[in-house]
Image 1 (tube, rainbow, N blue to C red):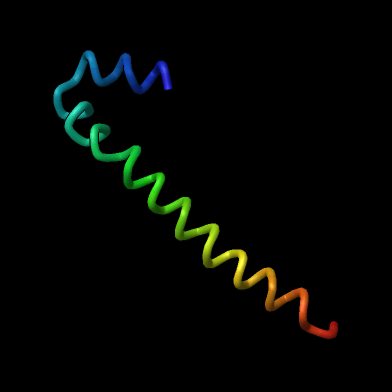
Image 2 (image 1 turned 60 degrees about the vertical axis):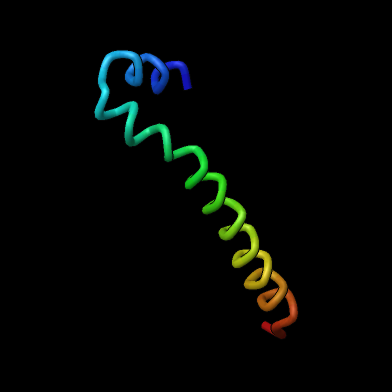
Length: 48
């Protein structure tokens, strides 16, 4: 994270892109957990 902060201080383009990235990453992590837990439950219920 310190590297990202350093890059933000040095580059306006990086700062612009990275400014939106943490929220995007957080939203994607929530969605990933939702979809993966559904798949995990499905696989646990299969008789393999």
